[in-house]
Length: 510
Image (cartoon, rainbow, N blue to C red; front, side, top):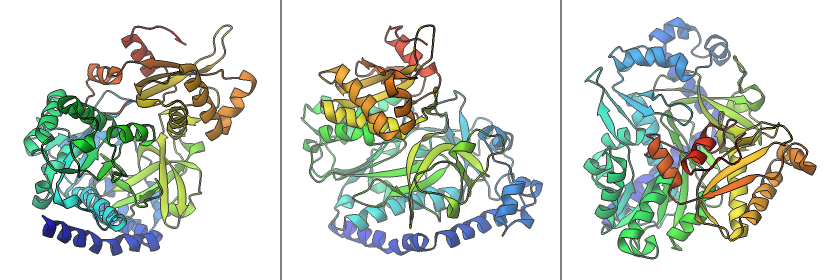
């Protein structure tokens, strides 16, 4: 194992010059990606429709001709692909589709995943993730044990038995190279089980006695697994179960509200946390610095980037800017064209650039997940930061949360209402609420202005709910599993009222 670890560490170090290249030459690399994508798609049905043959080197013409796409725009093509038609959006055969229900729409989405998207985007991202980890921690012993990943499930496509669909994590596990499969746990048979609660219990029992050195997954569901393992073993913290555990590779939701909880669950001085920015549509960013949570934008994965400034998010034909035009500190919606056949596709994520040399971002939320009922423009990043501050001030630990507006009514001012599931409740919920409000006012000047003298917003209302509430809520909605996330913020009360109904309270209805 020592020899294998040394070999893999050396191989990961050999990848670093590739990363350095796009850090030094971001615009040249993105131009190469753009030309590659448009050349490959020129003879597809989509490419012929929009005349890709004429715009292979012309990004401005590309912006003029090709519309911004939503899933609904591309669905007719994807539906035909799932029935077996090819050469529609991408020129190689597409046999697998990443299934994602999202958090704002009950209907499943099926994102085409080409062989190029698997190899040159998702798997390349995984290798570069390990490369950057080794670069920061060259003495790692990660490869001397197992990496525990919580996967989803997949199934054969009933409309076309030559293709299949499932969670992106399941598709990746199914196609892993032999060396990577040997280093992971549990077995594919268990990892790809479709009964989520049974799977978590089986993973817990199977891995307790293994030498687990790395974890990867969504913080929300990883917490559930770790808590289950502590219940089974009776141990105080996870480092007593896995003494060699050294890293958690996490993504999909912000880690900010979970950091204190993980420090409680894993009391180890050798533990590292590394964030990724990946989704069904592709692998986009990796935390590359030990002392910063900024995400390095990965520019050579077959993904061409554009960005919509916040003021244009909800326009029918929004203006986009290129990588060379972005400004630090501004919020942008991400638009991608990919080697899976997504063209000028709005993925729904919003980012804020923190650096241009190289390009680094922070994920700030979703274009549909914000509260702006009174001009306060609160995004998920604001909420996560304020929540973490409130926890630090009151000794609380948070499992999950959601928030929504309380709209103006007769004799009633507007405000925000939160449902928070605590792992450890604050001794004083009123103090927690005050600190949450204070944190929001510090990070968001629009919110602060509306809170002045209770002008448009009054102090938030916070409901503390029992542990397991959000798990039960997600289960009732049929959304258990790593690809499903609790909607953090909403401009409507749909989610909040549904949770309040579950716990049997009608307070705060707007």
